[in-house]
Image (cartoon, rainbow over all chains, first blue to last red; front, side, top):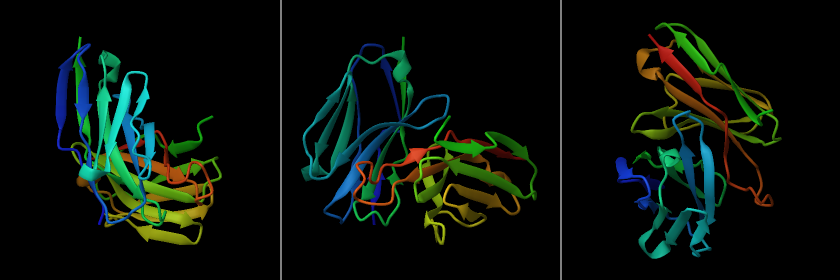
Length: 115
Length: 117
C-alpha cells in the first residue's frame, strides 16, 4: 500500500524566515512520482512540482526548493524568505508509475506566515 | 476558460436530499477522479474512472455514486445527503498514457463546497 505522511499539521513562521515542510512516503513500487500542491485560502489546488523517482536531483524554483532523498523516502519542500502570500495548506502526494492506482495525498501542512 | 469545471461551486442542502455535483473537462483526458477534502484529513478519493466504461471505488465510496456520461463529464451523486458529507469536493483529470509528458499529473477543478444541514 502507498502512504504519504506529513507530520507537521501546522507551522507558523515570521515573514522572511525559511521554512521546511516535511513529506515522508511509503511505496513498494520502484518507479513512482511525487508531487507538491499548494492550496491558498481561496481553496483551489495549485500544482507546484512533480518529481520522478529516478531523478534525485534537488530542484530550485525561485524561493522554492525541493530535497528528494530515496534513502529516507522523503521529499521535503523549503520556502526561503517566506512571504505572507505563502500562507496556505501544502499537500504532498504520491502515485505509482504503473498509472493504475490513483494519487495518494498526505493530510497537508497548514503554513501561516506572519507579517 | 478553465480546463476543468465544477458545478455548482457552492451548495447548501438538507439532510435526505439527493445532490449531484458535475464535472466537465476540455483537456481530452480519459481519466477522471472525485476527491473529498475535510479539514485535517487531506484529500481522499471517492471514485475514479479510467475511461467511459470504467468506474472504480476509491477509499471512501460509501454514500456516493458516480456516472461517467462521456469522456468529458463525470458526475458525483449523493443519493441521500447527510451532515457528515459536508466537505469540499474536487474533480480531477489526468492523461492516460505513459507517452504523455504530463503522465500521472492530475489537473484539479476549482472545487465544490457542499454543506448538508
